[in-house]
Length: 107
Image 1 (tube, rainbow, N blue to C red):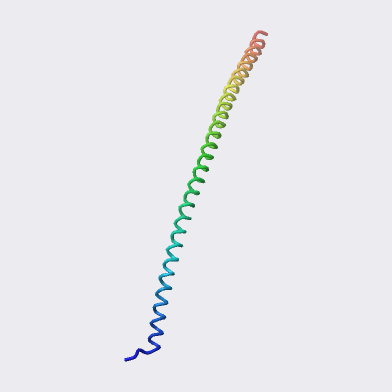
Image 2 (image 1 turned 135 degrees about the horizontal axis):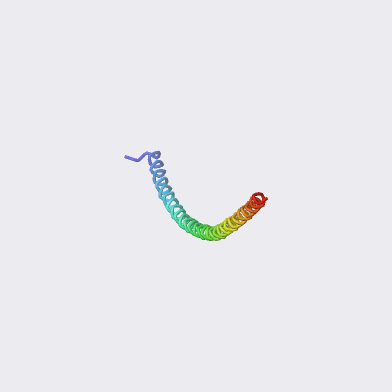
């Protein structure tokens, strides 16, 4: 029995499509490899950027800590000076009040 030409044509098309699928899977495999390479490179770049950012944040934190320590010392010095001034002012007021009372009582 002779094969139908349409059947032969369809068999040829099936074989051609099978080869196309094989080529397509090869292309997909190469694209997948490229994506993996890009993902690795991108991950490395992100890691380097993260390290740089962390280093900058650490440096900024150290600077802020130093400035806060300086500010704390200045505030403590100001409190101490204000306390001295307050005690001096109170001492002057007590002395003046004592002097006025002495002057008034001795008259």
